[in-house]
Length: 110
Image (cartoon, rainbow, N blue to C red; front, side, top):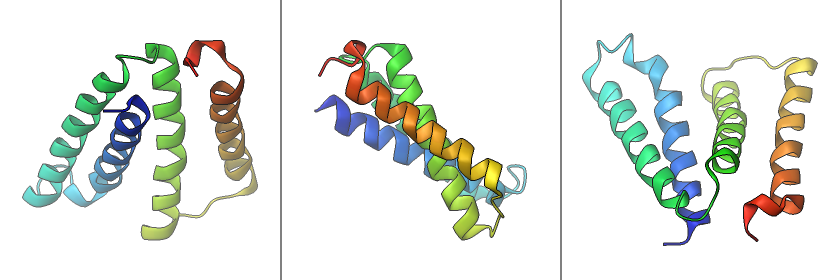
């Protein structure tokens, strides 16, 4: 499996798990709790696949950065959480960091 596909699956699984945390009601609701546990398990499994090629720091920076941005978007859309200008600016900087790592870093193994 391609390491970028594995990383994308890991990111999506983590975003689903993290976004579902609120629905667990502190792990008192079974189905959302199972989604969280399975989501994190899938995320960590696919992260290990991407680690076959990517350095751990680079993989984690991409995973965490994109995860933060996507979870924030889910919070905005699903939970109607408001984003102010500093939050939006911070998210733009996170995206810029991920782009810079992928385009310019020799550590990524292009």
